Image (tube, rainbow, N blue to C red; front, side):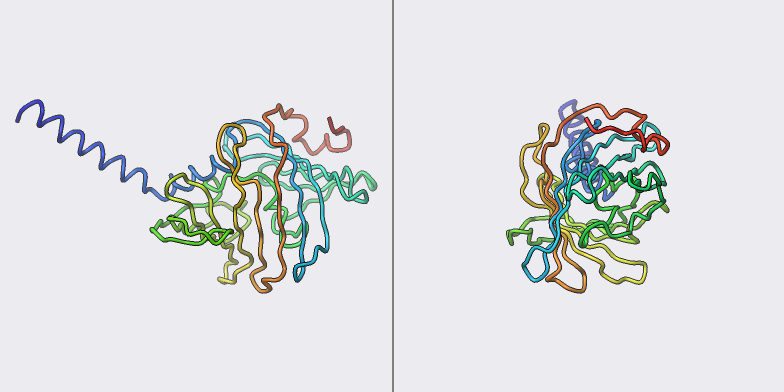
Length: 257
């Protein structure tokens, strides 16, 4: 066999290996996490708006500070209520397995569940920063065209995600990820009995910290499609998140910058 033939066989084998790796479900999920979340500490503003039958019924604005844990790779987050005024400076701390709510009025912190509702269809687990590939195992990926939140057809992978840790907010998730760029398109979230809890559409991609990221998530109730919650992300910046901020004992002393 000539050197040229050897090179051709090697190139073909390399291409096939690369293709197989590209189609690995867990690798696709991890790539979509990179689109949603920077791989360094950051801060952002999350504005939630709840709609019933097309009419706004509630809103809340949160400042979020997140950074990944050195060991697990999963994000830890401190969330501060900015508005409405009645909730200003209340805090939520998500650190590892623990999620704490702190009220400066009572000066008490109580443990919460990621599944507990924060506003509308958005739960605590929806507003904290999460790398899905750390909490879920993608067990399949199939090619499937789907419509995004603007009813545009996207060539996608449909992934089935099963909870892999006790910290996962949902029992299992169906998630569509655009094949060309790993952009999350939409997701459906289920209970262990198979009940659809909610659907989410990832929209309004804009250049943020170097890459296109979704700046809006539209969450639709699984039973009542007229019950909609929109999460809009703004002011995404790379910043230091002091380790002290992510300690429960520090919550009474936290001062927003």
